[in-house]
Amino acid sequence: MANSWKTISDGDLVRKALPAFTNARRFLKTINTQYDPTKGRKDGGVLLVKDPVEFTVRSGAVMNVQDITQTTQSITMATRRGIDIDISSIDHTLSVEDFDETIIQPAMQRLVSEIEYVVLSDIYKDVFNITGTAASALDTKLAVHNAYARLSQCLAPEDNRHILMDSVNMAQAANSFASYFQPTAAIEKAFSKGKVGSAAGFEWWESNMVPTHTAGTRTTTALCNTSTGITSGTATIAITGATAALTFKDGDVITVGDMYAINRETKNRYAHLQDFVITADATVAADGTVTLSVSPTPTTSGAKQNVELVTAGASKTVTLTRNGAASSALVQTLAYHRDAFAFVTADLYTDPAARMTISKKDNISMRLWRGTEIVNDTFPMRFDVLFGWKTIRGEWASRVGG
Image 1 (spheres, rainbow, N blue to C red):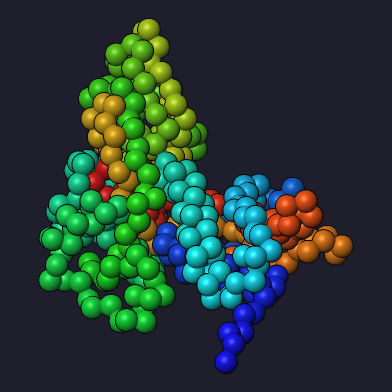
Image 2 (cartoon, rainbow, N blue to C red):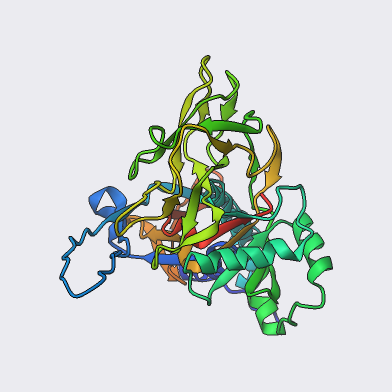
């Protein structure tokens, strides 16, 4: 009996490609994904996400009405990544199964790896919380337990917590946590490539798309006049006494003496200083001063209060090396709640006269566009994903060990 080969159709291709893409995800399957087929073509591709409203609590019987201020964050869907393939007429006669294994799966693995690296290389710089000691490898359980505690202190929900690290850190952690991991069901292993197991309140994921942060040349400490160098509601911190020409990099983390983290609901002070991440590169001036753009915005009163300044003064110590020594390059292990970050896609335009197909799965939209090339008897095709991302609740994430 002769073999029966099925010709590859547009529907076959996109139905195979998108599941291969979504199953290859590691980081993206653990965060909040949103999809709207129209938003990519409206308002310049900008999607607005509402921030939670925060309130102060009255003490006593006398009414004290407060204004409600609704704020939003914008997510811009303006980044595109794609894979392009040129298929000969002979290749076109392959079975769908052969084509899936030899072409589609490797292509989608490469595409999702690229997209995850693009997103991770940006969003880790928004994460200001740090637990553990900045080092080249994660080899202590305490740093992970403290990351769980930090997320709880920042009022992250107890479910949907994840930790993402590279292979070196995973090897160190697995050696330390070996007896804690739960066996993963075979079906879960097949579906969730890269998932190691559950331990310490987190789902553990391994990915070598986790970025490395190279710190600025800033050394050990400087000073901050917290009476004049910090203004509540302004996202800057002015420091003095630093060495001229030293640099701060976007993603470096500092603390300021007497500036403590608080419980965002009760406003009670915690025992640890508030971590601030630098949000723009900066260089110390010749007189030893520099004004740093930071996140979170230090706010010392009101419904959005996020820090407590115990005693304002001119000589508060600023620790400059929270996430590693000067010029150190460290992999950024991340612990986070799903809703700390958002990833959004939208449908790209399709021309009714062209061979364009949109497919959606797990809130991911992908477009396939096929053409013909008569001279060389080939069928070029392209897979495109239009996407955007945003750190929505930065306090619901923490770097672990730097």
